[in-house]
Length: 340
Image 1: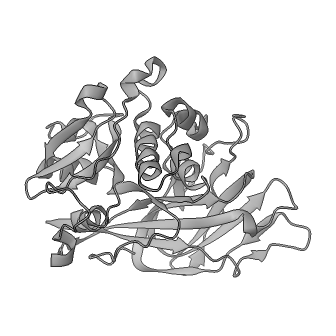
Image 2 (image 1 turned 135 degrees about the vertical axis):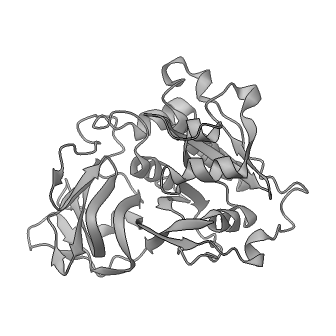
């Protein structure tokens, strides 16, 4: 099967960022060259301490730098005026769809700008940033034997036992909260694995912490990663993967992920339906099936199996977007498809 190409660029050192001017509250990054001609960009971030900031990006296409695009105003505050995506960004050079920069022609490089509302803040507040680049150019997926191996710490069935949570338990979120419920499941899993019970949070708290009034709703990919990854000791990224082999590599290293899918296609429809984007937590992959925790059903039915073919097609609707949440200090596996 052929997959669109993706790259994940993690940024954990910020010494190359320079203050824009002597009195500025904005810091501008180095230039990152892309190894693929990308058409979409998602940026996510984690903070060490609470801060109000704005994330912007600039992309190079055909040797020219674009305008600065706003990718979100972030704050851990519950004030709707301090945490929001920015609507109305569209011209001939591109557009921003809530959390995703979409380009009409291929991008070659990226620069970031971080602007703090408090001019005394510095980049020391940042734990990490992650750039997810996506290209529609296809390539065959070639899984490696290592990606299919099941290590000893997994159960005999290869299933990662992620705590189950359901958005159906919350009347106000029954049709809205698949994203924060999936994030809450991942946080609870690592809370159990590492004796951090404070990471196991009520879905209402997560939903309030990721809500984006500019969308509106709780499905902003970058905000969900920012919320989970800003817990002390935890990190998170919203990224695109290049195929199932990347997903298997993460699972086989003991790292469950939340995948963004078309719910209609996952359940057997031939094509996505309007507004059917959904998040599920992937717990295992076999030769024929994908086992998930599906927050969109009652708690007793959360663990579900879908055909691998249906999952592939459903996941492709989001261009293979996932949330990866993992503890600080824990190494990621090697990407068998060269995504990271």
